[in-house]
Length: 303
Image (cartoon, rainbow, N blue to C red; front, side):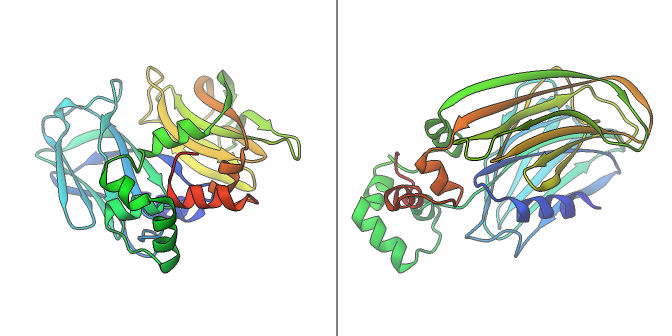
């Protein structure tokens, strides 16, 4: 399956918005344009837009990254990027279409990259800032809660990552695992975490990385009933750096390792957060919640 088809499938299956999807990709580049992603309607829309987050890639003076979010095209020289270094902000909103092209002046072998992609359900404050259409209900709530005035003053909306940080309360656990043996053609379970029914908590995959290897090695992430929700190629990863994600689960998170060859001592590292499922987060995840929480979430105000 082409990378854009896999990404489109995951975007359509995202259910506990916002979700930060980690996109890993590696391929040989030919001279000229190498299309990586082409997404459009109905995968992307003003009601479920996507927001690129941070980028990391193989440093290469011969490669130019071209990202087109809706109409504007943004270009980034990849010589300053590094998959083992700090992630570079690449924050662009796509409400209609998104394309990513790597232009190479000469052939490049195993060009690697990571791009974080937020799938969001925009609040009224975000809609006002981004110029997205408002329904009559949106307009009424905006007047009631003073949302438009807050946007004009620069108080709202909050960056997505900061909003999530404010809303998530609880404690975090960091796990590091060594996969001793991976049998060729079989997914080997690394870890599975489950919550008891009505626990009042939820889990979040917040980062992941692994030691780079070929052999079609992939990390599978299962969330609740979404079996192998994410299939992340290991080749673009590097165990020296943790790549961000935000994948909530209400009941179960499972991480497995797959390869086309028998491998030993495969190292995988990830961060899983465990948080209280508050009223405001129930509203955000489209679960049963109070009217106040639903209004606050829809408006995008501070809980």
